Image (cartoon, rainbow, N blue to C red; front, side, top):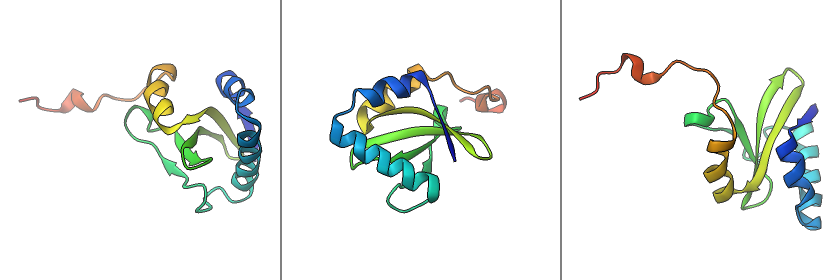
Length: 107
């Protein structure tokens, strides 16, 4: 598996404490070999982030990624769970999708 790192991901990853960087390397190695290992809790995201997935790095740290091609994933962001989901919505432009409300009846 090939990891394409975004600028944002690179910047945040370099600022992580040394111990967390080592854990990140271990998780990425595990992810490359067994992307759906239970330790990673690999899962799809919802709402405006529905085209992205997340894996656990530690109990609180998450990594958001996107399947880019058959053998490449794009590492989008890494941070604590609360920081990540508060900030990622404004920092990642949503994919172009049809609005669910376009055919909905609003009461």
